[in-house]
Image (cartoon, rainbow, N blue to C red; front, side, top):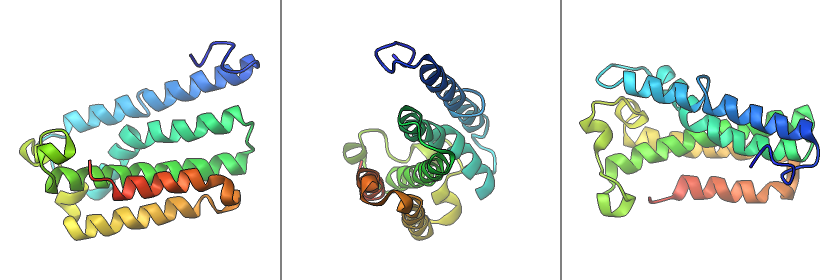
Length: 171
């Protein structure tokens, strides 16, 4: 889809989209993060290692989504940096909320087995920070994510709405 001429008439733009997705999905992104996640079961990870893992696993794909829009819109370097920073903070907030849902939710409410991370011995934001500090961190990351959007004014409201959805989601 990304390489198809219907996506964009400029072949350079299409190539940049394909490259960005390959990086986000590859060893430096989602696949690398998933590999670390699988290797880390029943290992003790500190907050820095968990943050790195989640930035790679979840954050890289969210960042690609923002970067793709920037590529298609021919955004300048400052706008791209702002969108990338937004996406990375949003990705971490998403993962912390996911950890909270896993710890506090039910299979019916979250649509998957609850408590799976703890049962697998996975280190999570919740296991390291506790429920309240993790919840506070997710809110702080949401605020930081939205602050990166300030240069865009009201044009970035849909992204701000996305942040609110991520922070307040129940499944």
